[in-house]
Length: 497
Image 1 (cartoon, rainbow, N blue to C red):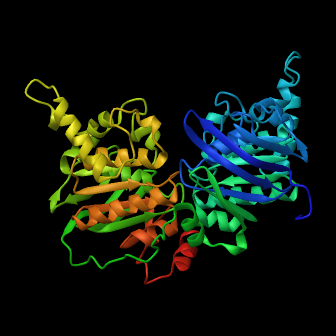
Image 2 (tube, rainbow, N blue to C red):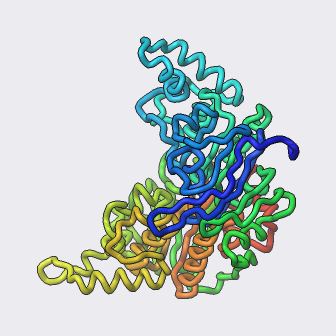
Image 3 (spheres, rainbow, N blue to C red):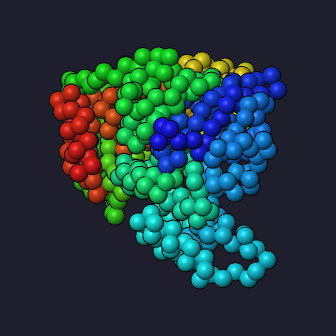
């Protein structure tokens, strides 16, 4: 493979937006049929590079070669015709159309003036899914599919359009580990068919597991490209950030700390049953389990969004009855949802308005009005305390990176000064440096006596941040582990068994 002409070669690619240089002299190549990972922090230029390759952004300078030929003029239609497809995080599917229609849409557009022949569309979709060794009901409406199934549809659509190179932008950000394993198997199948895959991910364990080569970007420049055998997760993290990330175990014995939250025989029909656990002051308690284990449903019940059918919750030694999330907030419980875009923030509104959302009642004056100075002081305080990178609190949240959006969500709930903070998959779609920043916030909150419940499906995350870890499966807690008393590998084997 080393002697072959790469399928894609970039030479000296630069891109300016006004006075900002987003890409600076990038030399890069992707070989035919290889799995190549592209990594870097949010804002490092990965997305701009991909958009330059697929013709969304015209480079300010440099050349692009595809299949050995110089391509001086490139637009999205030309890129697709040359076999380049991109699967963005939002997947860009048609939610109101069927699986077959989404997969074969490019095929239909080639014959747009002819009547739609549904059986031909179904035939195209069936053949592509067979190549992926994956079975889906072709008549199912895409909006009814899981995130993992939609990923498969997006990949299948690329194959139906004769893709030779597929960019996958954070394809595993919202998937469980079991779904990730299935996706990685499909990526390996694409390679076997001679299709190159550029895999963009913040999950470095996946990078070293699936890639043949890895390219690291920082501040619009290419740091370098290495065979994956020559770099490990720690080395990649250092190349991305310039920092040495501490991966030491932080688990503490919190058994002597005062009891903060006690849950006994908590059950909700069809979701979870007989949940028993205690959270101590200053403890970070992990809850891990695969999709469908009941972990998010439990969190929503503890936050008053759902009502339990049976069982009891005690907070600070007093019985707690939750009829709504307002009851939970007033009692001192805060919840950061796994769906930060749908439930965590209001994207078009300002950072300041988002931060004060949960404490507007406390800020309101005699006539229900909020003083501008009070709002600004609170917002500025939390922006500073959580190191949110922003030019001003009047900027819309949608202008921030994923990591900074997550910090705004944290700020909103920390402004309520909670006793218990429930974090549901808080680092999904967040780069490694911002992940580390969130973990540091969690550790600081624990030192201040806040009890933290950290829900995740990443063993490495709970292993490195939690004092204890509860394992949920099929709506029940089936085990408890202490990082250090078991190895990360042992914990992983039990979780994914």
